[in-house]
Structure formats: C-alpha cells, structure tokens
Length: 291
View 1 (cartoon, rainbow, N blue to C red):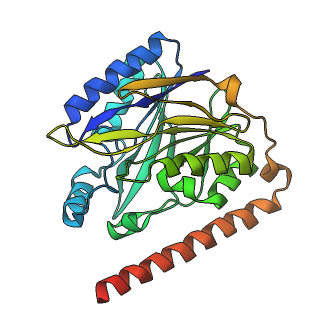
View 2: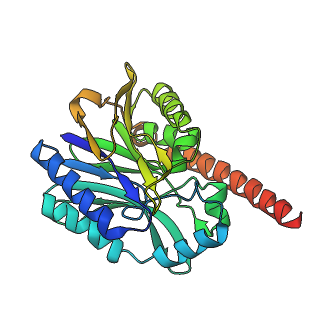
View 3: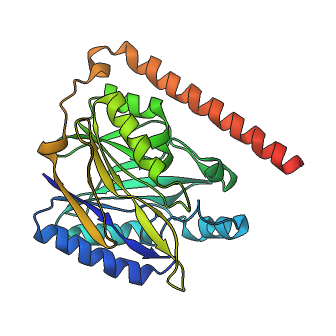
C-alpha cells in the first residue's frame, strides 16, 4: 500500500482555505497511487495550542471546535476520503463526548465509513489546563498491515509505544501539533522510539500561519526506519511524502496475544504511569494558581 503524508501550511481558523488545499493534496496523492492519506492535527483549522500564550483564547477555541462524532469536522474528512477514494487518517480532532472533550484521530475508509477512532492517551500540561481528557489505551488499525496509531504527545511516552510494539505493530502512524521552537527534537524522539521498538514511524506535521501570512509554528513531516533513521521528510510546504508500506513495515509477533496475562500487566502499567503524570501535572497547575 502506498501511503501519503501531507505537509500542509494551514491558515489559522480558515477552514474553507485549508480544506481546498487538502483536496488538492489528496487528489495529487491519489493520482500518484496512494491508497492511504494522512492529514494533520486539528485539520482543517490547525493545531497551534503549543504556540499560543493566550489561554483564554485557547479555551474558547476548544469550546467552539469540540463536537460530536460524527459531526461537521468528521464529515469534512469523510467527504475527502470518498471523493479521493482513499483511506484517510485524520486528527486528532476535538471530540465532544458527553461532558468530556477528547483529542480523537479518525480512520476513514474510501466508502466513508469510520473504521477506527483513537483518543489520544498522553495528555500535555496544556491539554489538562484546557480541560481536554485523555483516552484509555493505545490502538491498532489493520489495513494492508497492522499499524499502531499515536497522536502528538503519545510520541513522548515510551510505555505507549512499547505497548503498540507488544501488540504487533508493523509500523506506527501519528500526527504532531505545531511548536514555536525546538521542532527538531520531534525527530530525535521518533528516532528513539524507532530504535527502542525496531519499528518505522510515519509522523505527519504541519505549518501554521496567522492572518497576516506569518509562520507562527510548525512541526516536521517525516518517516523513520530502524536502518535509515530519517528515511524521508518533507522539504516544502503543501507537499506530500510518499512511501510504500512494504519498504518500511517490520513484521512483529503479537506478544500480548501469545501471553494473555501480559495484557493486564502492561495496560495497568501504562495507566499507572499516565495517572502519576496527570497527578503531577495537576499539582503543578495548583501550585501555579496559588502563586
């Protein structure tokens, strides 16, 4: 299966403009033979949460953008998949589920069916301050091969990525939000996870520009492999990075299935670490508020 990552320059909050750009890249990817297209975090408005300092503005964004799935944002992605006749992985999107808000990645079939829904497990400090909840466990999607799904801060968690490895991931696909600085560290993290788990990583970044056309943040779009480290990367805005899955997939046994008792142990470990992290961050938020 030919996979396409999309390195989009997104204008903040300009949905129509960004959707038209995405349509063109999906069409280009399809014409070049892609069967799976990955779209950036918080498409189609762009994820600048790590760029903005105005927390009041960000809370307003979360409130205005969070919606049920299916909803307007997911329908946009579904339409792109159906028009392009490709599988699409998009997100995370802001999902409203009852009183909670999640950062949720969707996997859409060429027929427009939602065949996978992954809620980001690893929350950042800013996610928690903005009232965004974390998901419960990592997830795989089986297409031509078995792919692990991650989103943003999941890349920073060795435990989540190890669990995907134990579950038999042949490659890991994820998206990354834009940052205002230290963007190269994202590549270093992906290389580390690649070597730890002998697994290729496909990371879809993005570029965010403000209304004046100034670049306010970005994250790289690239592919790692255990042999090449950085195997391919996007060097131009509004471009695609193509890779044949057979060139980067590494066969792994499902060790959890072979030793069922490991599932509860590993999942419990993952949840414990997540809980400790959450408690630590919550305490730091309280301390910050007190001062």
